[in-house]
Each structure stands twice: as structure tokens, then as C-alpha cells.
Image 1 (tube, rainbow, N blue to C red):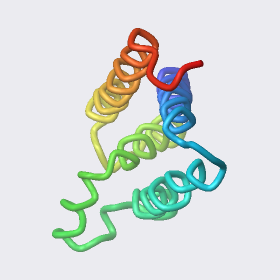
Image 2 (spheres, one colour):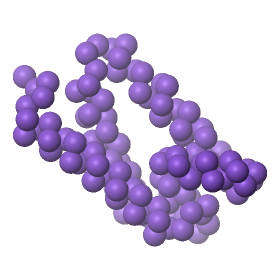
Image 3 (tube, rainbow, N blue to C red):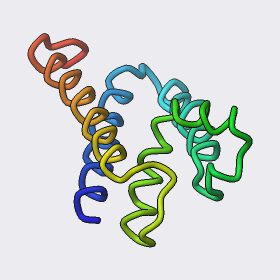
Length: 114
């Protein structure tokens, strides 16, 4: 549980840093959480199990990265998950690495840093 909690928090912290650098103003800052993250969370099985969906939509749901975050936390708390816990851990690790590489690149290049 601690792994899923720390990796999810660290990944979203890095992702928030990227959004903060990308946004020029407060309106742009709210676009990603409002138009991207909220729908992905609602469609990621936060309030239902994706096994309740028809087979086609179950497959489509597996392309949603939030499914793996929610599934990992659900496994940690309840011992049940829609996706294998190791796959969830791998996907969270991949998301973390992508965000970390992007932040590292930004710091090295100095893009939009003052």
C-alpha cells in the first residue's frame, strides 16, 4: 500500500509541476485538471469496478492510466483489483518515469524557468 501511495503522490506532484510550467495564467492552469483528469478519474473505475462494463468498454478502459492507479489502491486496501497488482505497479512506475524525465529535461534546458 505504501508503494502505491507514494508513487501516486510523487507522480501527480511531478505532473502538477509540468502543468504549472506549461500554463501561462490561471485559466490555462485549470484546463488539464478540469477537462482531462476529472473525466479520466470518473471513467477509470473510481466509483465502480470496470468488470461491470461490457467487454468492449473494459478494453477501452485499460487505455486509461487512472485505471491502474485506482486498481492498485483498491488492491492495497481491499485485496481486490480489476488489473493485476504488478501491472498496476508497473504502469504507475512508467507514469512516474515519464514525468521525472520531463521534469529533468525542463530543469536542464531551463524551459520557462526564470
